[in-house]
Image (cartoon, rainbow, N blue to C red; front, side):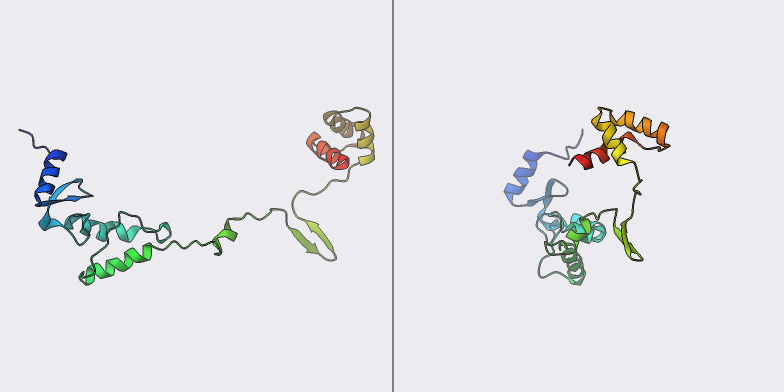
Length: 172
């Protein structure tokens, strides 16, 4: 004969009779003698959570709803563990806190000062014959053709995308 561990009808009858309570961790009815200071859990589950689970919670995560809360008249061990639970409970992020500024990404190209001149770090600007590029563009030549012609005639190895950006900057 097999023993049924989970039987909701049986559990409801035991709880209705007043001899048992519902343990949220076991998900079954447990005898009232086993109830912990936190009415949601039996003493075994309460001890397990407070000994093994609560100490490894991240202080940044906040206090999860499942964390047991000892009763006000608890012994010293439970009071110490309550301190751990309260420590875990704080959400350290606020609207006016420094966390908001940490999440904002700063631009990668920052201005630096060298001597008297100020320049941007990052890709260096190449001097190109912009008047020639504008003339070829006005003649109807595309950016790929302009890049190829610059390579052949002027010995500039430059991407057609750079030509497009330069032309766009001139037109704006």
